[in-house]
Length: 97
Image (cartoon, rainbow, N blue to C red; front, side, top):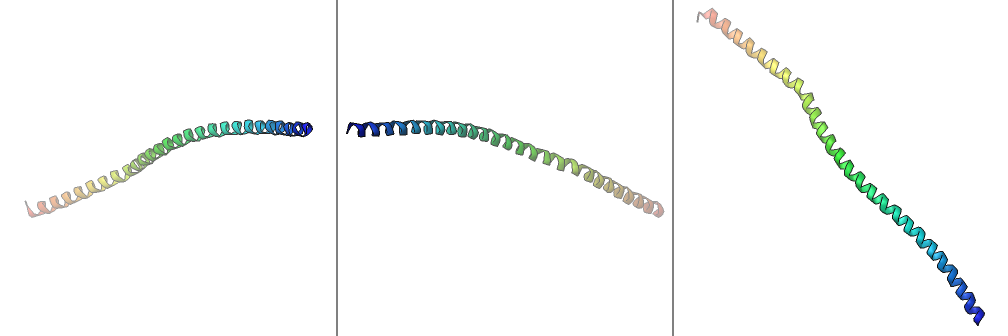
């Protein structure tokens, strides 16, 4: 009977050592996962900042691209106004006014 208890105690001790080793490995992995989780959170925040900056840059680029078109429209409008004024002036001069 004593041999049986000794044998069972030896098995329990071996299983205990195995379990301790497994728990140590799990704790190490959990530590790695926590570290990775913190890193992902930092990366997500940085990504949000990058996205905000990209949106600002896109708005600035659209604004810059629109300036030459606005200038052209203004120039054409001024030329048309000048031509209409010249034609009106010519007609008024012919009428003697």
